[in-house]
Image 1 (cartoon, rainbow, N blue to C red):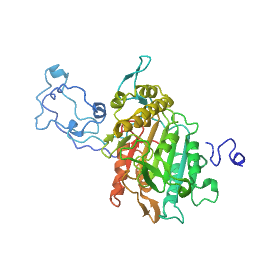
Image 2: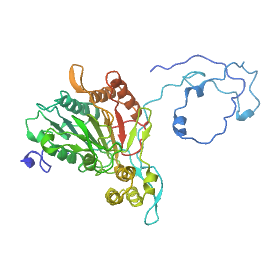
Image 3: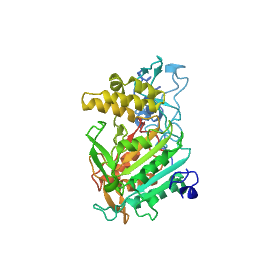
Length: 428
């Protein structure tokens, strides 16, 4: 039956401004003083590309010189030129253009290690250029007739489908929709259908693909069984049949949707659910200021994770998992040790990011926007991008929070499978 509808595919899922001139300023009396020598510092490259406007102010209060300075004085051959075209001394520079695009080559980070063949290795990842194939999975569950029925989740899924097609070039035939108003049971967000759809989403993933996962529904927390959560709880989501089939835990979603991805493949995940801050179990977490929580790779290696680190640096994610899994079984110390060991397996050379509706300790709002029931996070994400499609990760997170904070207490989070330069352009 499935193959008649979708030949060669798993059940139910398809194949995949005006310038500003403040006027003339007289030239300064002699050249400016030479710059003070200084060493390099973190962020120097960014500052060189985006000079602070104060650095472009004039040296005011000087009368025009009687003539040119002596030949070669201070390294100048003639009087200093006037202001650059379209910009006077003392003015602010024109606002910068859009944020820079992510680099296309591999990004190495963290400590260096020596593998069993005495080779120098280092963890790496690769940003996606998002110019490959596009696939999406959108899940919306209102839990009709159940306790704590929701109103806006199906709307979220349909709005997100339309948003992806209108703004990012996705095609409806490459988007799987699971909603609990579906007439076809294969489109119902049951636990098995959701897991099958997650597997479909990442199947045959390649570098520079852009995969998208959206979930709007109930979320919660369950007691952590494997020691990989700082707070002692796993984050979970609830299928429509969760009372019969159970919830889906963050570890399983990571195993299905993150681990199989190759370097340079993008997975963007949005969770509009309670307790969803790290629902995809990604180890780096960012705030509006760009600060982050991150695993201590050197400390983890010092606890005997060299084999896992070496496998990771070679891109052998299976080796990472097996090595760390074996080490985890030998851990007999504190919870912190177990956390360090298993969290090490959550990094990835792929480009995986998650926007979540709230921190792990918060609940997410099901609300009314523009006369329609909707999830607050889904609404804010789509609104901010429609207002300005060319934003940095940091700008996008700040603007989402600005929309939410006027009405809701929830604070959305950005997390990732690798360290992010939050000043880069968000692409999808």
